[in-house]
Amino acid sequence: MRKSKWLVSPVVLWLSIFLILPMAIVVVISFLQRDEFGNLIYQFTLDNYARFFDSLYMGVYWDTLVLSISTTVLCLLISYPLAYYIANAGATRQKIWLLLITVPFWINFLIRTYAWVLLLRSQGVVNSVLMNIGIIDEPLKMLYTKGAVLLGMVYTFIPFMVLPIYVALEQMDKKLLEAASDLGATRWNAFRLITLPQTKSGIMTGSVLVFVSTAGMYVVTDILGGAKSAMLSNIIQTQFLGARDWPFGSALSVIFAITSLVMIFLFNMALRSRHERAKEGRA
Amino acid sequence: MIQLVNIEKQFAGQPVVHPLSLTIEEGEFLTLLGPSGCGKTTILRMIAGFEQPTVGEIFLDGKNVTELPPNKRDLNLVFQHYALFPHMTVEQNIQFGLKMKKIPAAEQKERIAEAIRLTQLTPLAKRYPHQLSGGQQQRVAIARAIANKPRVLLLDEPLGALDLQLRKNLQAELKQLQRSLGITFVYVTHDQEEAMMMSDRIVIMNTGKIEQIGTPKEIYNRPQTLFAATFIGENNVFNEEDGRMFAVRPEKLIPVSDNSRGSKRTGVIQDIVYLGNVHKLVVHLDHEQTSVSICLDFTDEDTWQIGQQIGIDWSDASEVNIGP
Image (tube, rainbow over all chains, first blue to last red; front, side, top):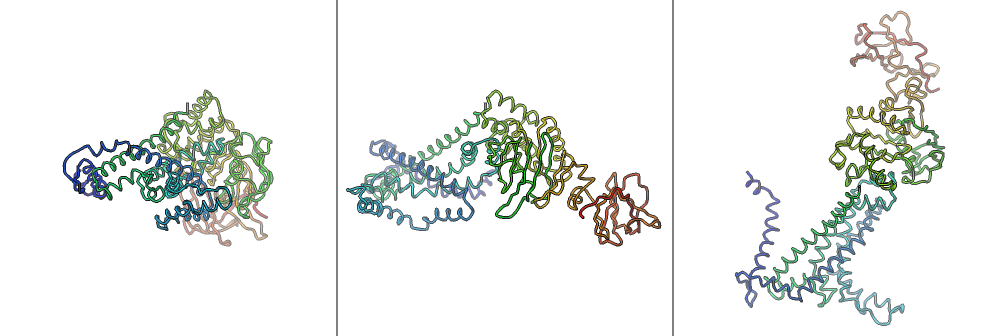
């Protein structure tokens, strides 16, 4: 009875083929060795994980965490007010704004990212303008810095944050705000005590999407960060495509996946404890 | 207590409430009654502060509050669909207003307990709104409002979403609550029976205008307009040849089986409806294109038959002039 249920369920089948099986393969490979041509040797080892604790990789790991968290926080700070504004605008204006936010997706992602190169490089648009109006004499070093990577990431992932928050705001019963006002709440208190908790799910979804996407994104880092600002995902890419060291690449991937899960868990806890604190505040 | 002075409300140039004035007395249960779209909810929302009158002024306790936002007005609204905060327990919902007004913690506790006791929510205090039935949610909405000890409680079709039996129970409870709190209730409903049962005074509204203001008794016995006459209870409207229009309640009409004495109207019985303690004749009039209802109580022992030709009489005192 139970067994047949499992077999019948298409979700289980789908998850097995597209999620569990590939993950299992990666986990298995991360414990294997390789020969000098990159072929897998089926012998158990922990060396791949040990290598990760090399200071070089730990530094990259740390940089990746900092970048992903900064990108998430910046996206949230920019997107919440924007989503709030859109959700409270008139119906026509809402449509226009949502269109504007999704339009960049119509343009190839690589082209959009290279456009930032044109803007940021030494002879780029921003530097030319600043020099022409005499604010600076020397071109600013903007391209191939961590700042450029952060900018590119935030630019790329803002829609991932705006849309879930917009949906959460849109679904909220507006009468709740009237009720809050009727009960004496100022606009700020109504926002803090009603709107924010009511849109928690949107913040959560957006943050997870942005965090995981940023941590896994290597194209932006490649194009805007140059060789020096490698992130964990760049290293993983190199291991698989360049160095042909699949076991080490797999080990990094597993570490990366675990990190993402931990971060999602921590974020969830942070939001929940806030909610719980609000609950306890009644005494 | 509350005075609306020549207020008028337009939405996008369309008048929703035509200029009207209304005085609500301290401690009364006043009902705004009318079909949907008659402007009754808009008036309530203007009193609460969610809408600004296009023209006119609103006074609360002699103070002009026309420009004040809702959070600065000493009254509370019970919303049609309750608008309970989903992420807060019953207790926290009730506490919200007290916190906003920075009531000391000890007094908050007392007031919450009092509101919960009055609305019989004690066993549900720690529940979340989604764990409550419609009737229970309704009680929380009222508890949340009265915990603030408002001078006036505004209620926007508070029982509209509930089934009939529950509604009847809560009507009695609400009336009881109003008496024990002694505060002014302004109640909006489209249910005329509800209005009749609960109100001290009823304001009948239609298409943004006040049709009549009066006690339930006055409104039932002395309707002033055709709308008031037909909206409240069942009524029969007669037209005289000189253009005079008057109404006679079904229970005031007297059927006459022996038609020879020359009664005021004649007609043919179309239907006989038994309603338990009363029964009703539906009679099609001979010389007017209309049917009338005659209500008979259990003392009536005549045998009426469908198709029977009868006369209809009434005493002149039962006629209520409506219109010109």
